[in-house]
Image 1 (tube, rainbow, N blue to C red):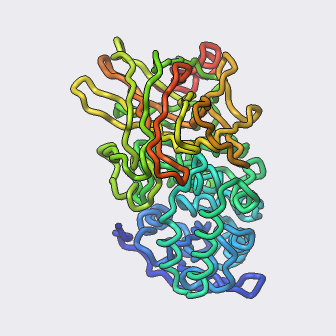
Image 2 (cartoon, one colour):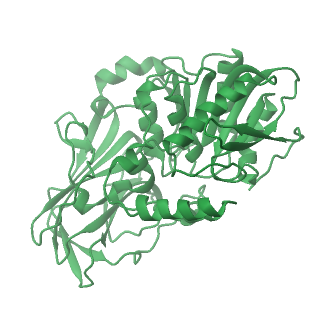
Image 3 (cartoon, rainbow, N blue to C red):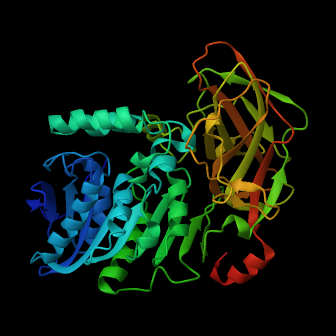
Amino acid sequence: MPSITFPAPSPEHVDVPMSDGATLSALRYPASGGGPAPAVVVMTPYRKESLMHGELLQVPIREGYEVLIADVRGIGGSSGPYHGILAPREVDDGVELLAWTARQPFCDGRTALIGGSYSGLNQLLIAARRPESLRCIAPWIAPIDFYRDMWKRGGIPSHTAWGARAFLASQRAETRRRGLQNFYGEIVGEDFDTELFHRGTPDLSAIEAPALFLGGWYDYFLRGTVRGFQRATCPKRLVVGPWSHDPFLSDEQRGELAAWLNHWLRGEGPDPSAEGANVRLSCVGTDEWETRGDFPEAGDIAWLRWRPVEADHPVPIVPALSATPMPPPSNVDPMVDLVTESGMRMWGESTVFELPAAEAPARLLGPVGLRAVVRAGGCEDFDAHARLSIVRPDGQVVPVTEGRLRASHRAVDAGRSAHDEAGDIVVPWHTHTHADPVKPGVPVTLHVEIYPVHLRLAEGDRLRVGLTLVRADESAAPAQAVLLPDTTVSLPTGPTEAAGAARSAGRDG
């Protein structure tokens, strides 16, 4: 991973006292211009000295800001008792770190938070506390739901290698022990969405600081990026490009981050959150970008409903990890998926269904809805993995997006789910509060949340849905399922005529 590759000020180590007696260990990169300057702050669980931070820090250092990167408590050089991942005390630390920074002679009283993934979610939690000095945040590839985005997507344990990587790298033996116990004993061990997970889900409506949501179409936190933007009420901007979950910034990302910081910390340049032009999306399958005034909600979309199954269709329920992984898109490092165990592209396809070839270019923008009606035998629970791909005329398969759901977690809150114009669920809100075992021979309806897309089909391209069912019970006996004809796929063909007319001023083609 790259380090800072241009002449940069040598960092100095500072210890920041917390109100409970703990100390946060930070590296400060002084501003190049001299004199008090706005300060850009990062809080990380990955050790402040790690080379993975160099790519991100280049932007504020180049722009002449004071830059501080601090270890979260109990990690690296920071002291204090560890209370668990993104515990309330850690959020307190972030608020106190900003207040301390704003008081220092090197800072002019204005601060910003930046960072990705974990360091994106902690920004949202800190910003919801409305620190006085905070002028803007930039959560990059960040989740917003501690349960649904991070650890139990679809009710299935996700991203589970994170605990070992993060806590075994801690310098402090007590944090290694308590962190691993907390992560694998509580977070991975707890099946349902309890108070344990609620603490790490930010109140987006409480955030006043302008927020730049940066995400990637191939990132396993894409749901959080889009929902975070849609639910936030502060000045905001959304940028989604052909990226995955990795620490490397593209030219587009560096430019967006620099423009965001410079506007909100120095008043330079146009307002990136300006209504009608605050959404910037790349289009999968092309080199094009589109500027818009929104990311469409389900009610603003014209839906194409596809019934892929004309007759009962057998689908094997395979043992865990027996499906062959799908190659990632060419611009995604496969190690991003394999090392993080995110689940993205790690499952094969037991069965596939394809739409007829496009007779003319077509575009999809928005979430994808899958209602899989399944009758299973010899299995009390299984995980459904669904993938949407483009099949080129030459047979090349390009994976685009995915969804997953544990069958026993199929209960939905209809009031919190999004519906199409006919009233059918297209974006489900699963409660994840209890398990409903699968009864032999009794059909179950699975509303699988598939991540949103922005793609263009060329003439001759086909859309493909792949499905794999994997055992999630304790039986070793062979099991079989049947996909029933009531199964539907809802495809977002674009804004409805009324919504499109109302928003057309925000597009640049």
